[in-house]
Image 1 (spheres, rainbow, N blue to C red):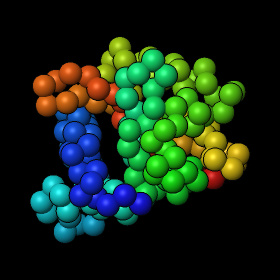
Image 2 (cartoon, rainbow, N blue to C red; image 1 turned 90 degrees about the horizontal axis):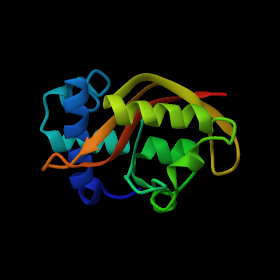
Image 3 (tube, one colour; image 1 turned 135 degrees about the horizontal axis):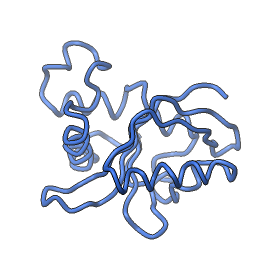
Image 4 (cartoon, rainbow, N blue to C red; image 1 turned 90 degrees about the vertical axis):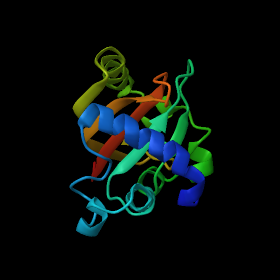
Length: 158
């Protein structure tokens, strides 16, 4: 897993975008109580390495590619972080699930966020699992330019 200090700039941007949409920081309500009031870097290190939810982000290219995944996402999808960062995000869903995934992406593009997202996903090895209670949100840089989309989702067995 990539060291938190190497991904901290992108994690801070994801956190700021999440807070803009959801009004709370990443991990709020799920991280250990001491981290709720800890410095941002400590909470984001937990999100990166230990969070039970998956956190992913994709860019804005014509065929969006993942630009960030936490340890939970790498574990559940079965890709190394390096493999994930060259993977088009559409390949995380089954062929049958592409229509629902595209509809969710389009909703986020028009509304800025989608709460309660779920769907079937596929691992590198071809195994299926479900996402539940997903929160999809637009990512913006410090100049408020849209640079991608983030997803905080919970895995469940298929």
